[in-house]
Image 1 (cartoon, rainbow, N blue to C red):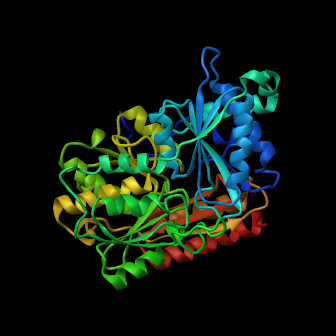
Image 2: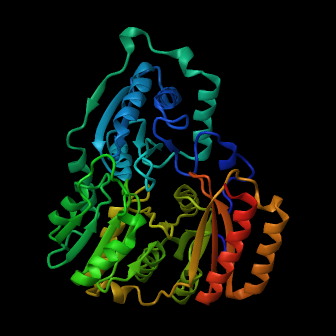
Image 3: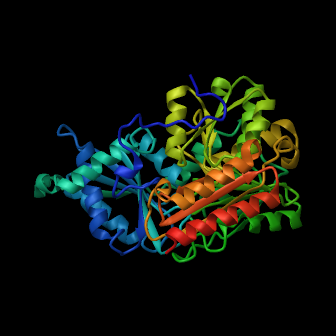
Length: 469
């Protein structure tokens, strides 16, 4: 059964944890392109190890490779494909496609793995590699650890395919169309989006063709922005990292909704018709209330993370819905959902998982779910979100030299304890390290905005003093 409301669940049971991995982080492998952390040698080794991990002597399996719009995607794609084919497996390339689209193509084409080349919301000069299994779910920590071990031991290089058995590379030219059709099938058949005006920020990323197409084909009147990728402008002052842009545009135009995606379109944030931000927690509230009213919310429970706003606890409790928190990372959210029969979960940043529709976070799917609720209830977005009042929350990122456990630094732990005692039932503080960057994230949340700002500044200052680069 699901954990009690507002509890933080651990998923590893003392086995492998993210800190045990050297290569993989909270969402795959990431680093500055063509640096020691993300280069052709690393990509080739990952390709070989991934291929070896799923290789079957009785057949020649295939692996799907997709990417976002970063310039370095060409380089990493070629290296990955070289590594995979050198093991005797075939490669299917989709070209630029949202991460959830790669997971879908992988599953629909019965491929052994789907590999996405993307650093998600990170700047254009970084890139990454994340891997989906044959079932469309991201690999879990144990699977990633197994691939790391193969790389460390150099096992794949001892089992290269003989010349006659080297794999082939083919291109799926209609991958966008397949994914568009998949998304449309998840929108209620009796409904369309005629009469809905949408402001759409594609972040110059992987959804630059898919997002406008699927919304237009469903009948919406859209105005797309940042849908002209250059290889250098992904996430640049746009997309889900800068939701204030789409909020300003939507508020001025009085469109029905604003939609803003991140670079690989697995995240989404929204604007209501008045230009107010509707974040991942608000999207969870709207979706949970709708599903619960129809008896379709698994276990009457939603899965969030330690970053999920305390205001969501209160809003869901009024609807008879429980909230369970995991550690940060959509793979943690999904893992708990799968084990406990829960079909809705996500993160404040806009990773939303509808497990009855998809096996991974999907920004476009989440936007379509909200649009369908707007149509079914004939209510504007501002009306749907009314029952959710977030607590004032502020996060400060501090660049660090080393990720020393916070508990090892007395001054930090003493101050945090003092802050938590001051807040008591009014709020909380949270310290964590980014899984993809050398950054400490300091968060304070309370029922008083001035108190929140004061305490988070105080805590960030001591972290900066003791750990700052």
